[in-house]
Image 1 (cartoon, rainbow, N blue to C red):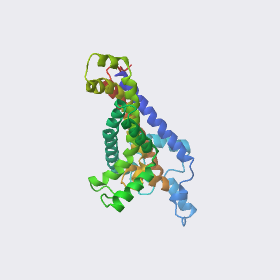
Image 2 (cartoon, rainbow, N blue to C red):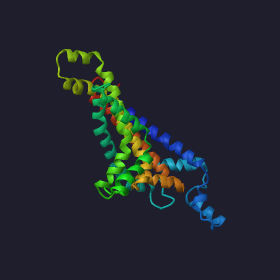
Image 3 (cartoon, rainbow, N blue to C red):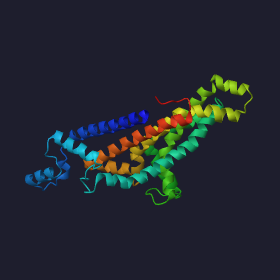
Image 4 (tube, helix red, strand yellow):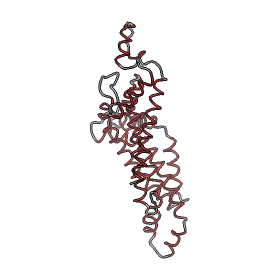
Length: 304
């Protein structure tokens, strides 16, 4: 119980810190009235608009009001659409979550077995080929990869749609675009960790006892190699939820990253703040879940 309470308080502190830093950064980014107020507005109308949004208050008062609203779950009203910022993000959240889940599933299904195979067949032609692929996967820019996928599979072959989220086919191109880098990353991670574990004394003892290689690899070696892998998967989930901007933009995906990018273009501060706070919460929750999984994967892990 003490561990859970401490982690929960750490999560709250992290979210508060992120919210504060972003609030201050946006305050230093310039006067939003330059974007909100039409050019034909009089000075009196601009001041009235400023008062309506509370921008005429001192910075400390704006911050206090903001934190009070944040505690109530009120993240403000979008300056461009007039809708609650949190409601806008909530409407786009399922699309991003679905895409990220598909991308991570593809990366795990392809990257994990490839990494195990590369470690078991270390220094063979299979290992060298998989390592060469991992270098390509990590080096290929996401925007270039997405454009190439559209050019080949949508424009040239006409097999898959290039935009939108209408059916399961719409998930294939953006899903593989997001997962390509993660497949290579997971492959390299699990290969490196498996090689380290397979060189340990208890693995040699298991083999000396006559255990089948399959049992040695999957029951003894893989379980211990999964600790850093689970950490990496959790971090990548958070990164994708908050960083799939390019992919969502290229494939016109109706996700919250695309909404946040539009909010940056229009300097829609409530939506930007809501997006950053939401992604901070996602990172905190994912890290907490990863910590819990440590104990399930490796019984030697104890919470102090």
